[in-house]
Image (cartoon, rainbow, N blue to C red; front, side, top):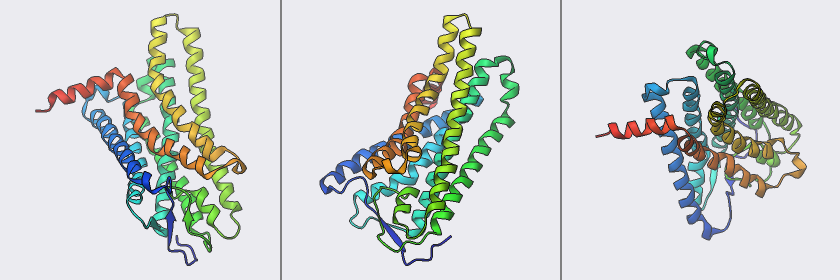
Length: 308
């Protein structure tokens, strides 16, 4: 999986070229990364250790927390290193590896949110059959499926990008290696790569988003026509609120970067939006689920009380 050009490394130009801002940004992003890892690790810990959270909803939440830790780890450590470094280089193999894991974890998270939407649909619309439909084996298979699809989706992009020729500049106008910035540096025809990016990536993103909308459509129809209790209506909607907030925070930036026509793209805009879905969204996941979810808050309190 190596290219046939003389390029052995790329230079990541980062978030900004203003030197005086580099130490400030280092502190901000380091604090964000620590909060992200600590928060998501706490959720993962309580989901595994507390028997009261051994349900499909929290099984998928544990997967989401694991994804968010890994997702930000793909880009943030290298970004932090470059804030304090003069030579902001990344090897060719390192760049392709970063691209692969970024798309692997990102596409897996998008599909996982669709699975979580389906889980909420079954829990609200088919409560009597919930434990039968969403049994442990089915949940494990669904989670494994989205991880496997995400891996091969990313492998497609990493293999095809690694086969391109890079004969010009090796300066990437981004803070991590992504397909779009690399295609701009490639020599020769990149039509197939662009087609794969738009067709395959858009299919995964739009397909997952459509399934989420479909789940929420049936949930809303069920609640308004089958539920006559305002209290039950509020309770059902509150269980979906955290998931819906994550959907908006993730899919908005993803659509802006990958679904938008290339003619409307701007590197500065792309970098800003990329910070949103690769740095901000993962750190908001534990905040959203701990502040809005009484069961997770209760589990965290029980874990803290058990500590000597």
